[in-house]
Structures are given as C-alpha cells and as structure tokens.
Image 1 (cartoon, rainbow, N blue to C red):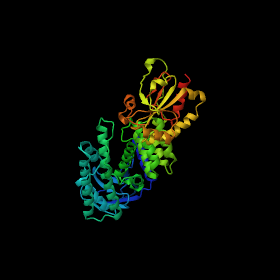
Image 2 (cartoon, rainbow, N blue to C red):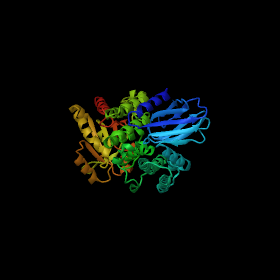
Image 3 (tube, one colour):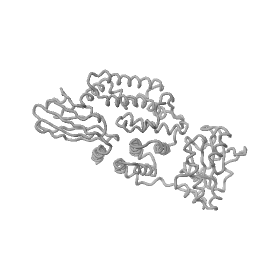
Image 4 (cartoon, helix red, strand yellow):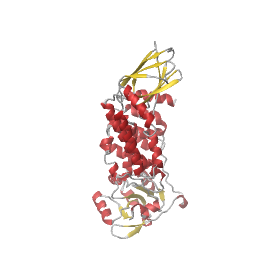
Length: 482
C-alpha cells in the first residue's frame, strides 16, 4: 500500500511544481512484442514510480513530467539500460534492437548529449560525485582541511570533464551543472561537521571555518530554482541545522525535538517559497518519530498557510497521519511522596552582589529559566513569559516565582541584558557558561532550558515547556493551587 501511495505522490507532485514535460520516444528494430518498463527518477522526497510504456508497430512515445533530474532505467526483454534525464531538456529519442537494449543504443534529441555526458561522468567519477561518498568520507576524514581538499578536487574534475566533453551541452545545463558541483563542495563541509559532531562525546558541535562558507546565506538558500539539484536540497537542510547550532554557540541540543523546534523557528523566519515548503515537508516526513506531535502539527499548519502548499500538505498528512493525531506525552504533576521528586540546590549571585540558594524559594512554585544574553531564542521567549504572567491572578502570582538564572560570564553583560530586555522576575547569575554550576547540576546542554519546582523545592519537570507552550501556565496553576 505504501508503494502505491508513493507512486501517487510522484504523479501528483510533478504536476504542481512546474516540472517540464520531456518526450521519451524511440524505434525498436527486430521483434518488438512487449511493452517497455520505465523506472523514473525519484522526486524531492525519495518517492519513485514505474510505468509501462506501450510499444506499437516497433515504436513508442511518452510525454513524461519529471519530478527531478535523474536516472531513468528502461527494461525490455530482461535487458536494461540507464539514461540521464534533465528537467531542462524537452526530448530523448532512442533506437535499439529488440534483444539488445544493453548493447548499442542510438540517442538523439536535446537530452541526448546531456545523457551521454552524465553516463561518461558516472563511469569515471560517479562513486565520488555522490551524497553517499560525501557521508562516508566525512566519517573517515581526519580533519576538515582534508575533507575540503578532496571535495574541491572532485568538484574541479567533474566541471573540467563537462568543459572538455565533445558533445553539445546547452548553456542552461552547463550553468545548472556548475552550480550543482558547487553545492557538492559546500555540502562536504557540512557533512564533515555533522559526522564529527555525532561521533564526539563533547557537548559542542564541530564548527566550519567561516571563510569556507562565507558565500552561503539565507538569500542563496531561497534560490528555489536550484531545488532540482540533490546536493542543493541536502545542503539546504544541513544549512538550517548548522545555523540553529550557531544560535546556541554550537552547543549540542539535548534531543531532536529541541533541535527541530529551533530549526523550524529559523526556517520560518528566513526561508520562503518552495525552499520553505521543501524544508517543512522534508523535515516533517523525516522527523515524524523524533519530535512531539504538537510540534508536527504546528509545522504542518504553518506549511498549509503557505501559498500553493496543497500537494505538500497532502503528502505529509497521508504519510504521517498517525503521528499528527497522537497526543504529546502528558506532563504528570507528581505530589505523592518525597521519593517521587528530586531536590537540586544551586547557589547564585543576585543583582545586589549577594548570593542566594534555590532552596530559599521553598513555599512557592518556581518556574526556572536558564538563559544567557547572547542567546537569541532565549530573548524571543521573554515577551511571551511577560504576557503569561499577566494572565495569572494576584493569588497565583504570590504563589509562583519566575526565576531567571543567566550563565553569562560577567555581571556587566548580565545586568545590561536584564535592563535592555525588561526581564521581570527574580534574577540570578551562575558564571562560567557551559561550565557553570547551574548547567552542571541540571545537565543543561542547550538554552533556553526551563524547569519547574513545586512548593517543597522538588523538581516536577526538568525539561519543562516554554512560556509559548499553552501547557505551561496550566501546570503552574495546578501546582500553585496545591
């Protein structure tokens, strides 16, 4: 059933995003007594489809709406042959003997030279000029300089091969292919960072030297015409992930839910058009089992609000309907016994220069916000927290303490941020950044990080929802009423 759905997706998808029809036709000499099976290139999301192309009077003809450039596999009388189809071309004509599709095949049409070049390139550099090779190389590379040099060498080789190709390649294809090769090079840097970050036990992600990626920015990621390139599509996803890490000084996220939330925040602020729709659709399909259903629904609803998103939204709903309909893991307010909780005490500096302990706030429900002046996502939540406080009654406010502990390294920067941002609540400073006492004791690897304590000073939720989450105020109210 899933494969049938994938076929439907592919056919619907190509009719929406403006794929150019390509006429696939040909002549078969000898005894032509069966149809041709065609395995078409995959679309942006890995969906593929097969189709029987009727052969009549030793000839065949089929107009194909390509989902993306890629390899077409034709099978006839148990023999098969691959041809490269480029979306910018309009026709590919074949001539072959009925029993020898794997032998001599004559090709004509404006896709012919492109297919011949790509076949030649695949024979010479295909194993290296691929996403699979980049991922394997990234795991083995000892340093980013070695990775960069190898990828740059491959990139130059394939561009040089195109420039030396004796056939006639259109100017449009040459431009698109050079961009494709350029994205291969940039992608190699991000794959190195991802591989080393994943393999490392330290809490910081592997950074890419800024000089190597200074030509990449959000404007370039919004070149939706480049989405035909597999390397560009993968680079777009990697770029969003990397930018989210940079927002947090390259500290690793605690889990994929936290990471995807920040990536989504960045994407909707900076991506647009088809680039945004591709990112949202691909991320929803890929991360459906890694994040809470509420975030999936939030992303899906945002996708639906973008112009021309009907097919993308349908693909998402049809593919991950179970996850979209599920409930988040319920937050349980524990009240039974002392053993049900954990009490963790920390000592921090207040605004007057004196120290105080978290345990001194017993008797109130504490909503702890761990932040820093340099943290963009932290700043985004402060106005939301202020609005949430205004929804509380006077009695609730007396029973709930909003505690903000910064991990800035200096008092000057910390106090300046409090004043400039108008952060209302009780404040504390735990110097040392990621090596501070508060990050160590609470196992903080990304900020903002929220925790909720009950009136006895016990941790109720060590990974509490953000102020922007409607569950937060309800949890605080329940605890305050006890």
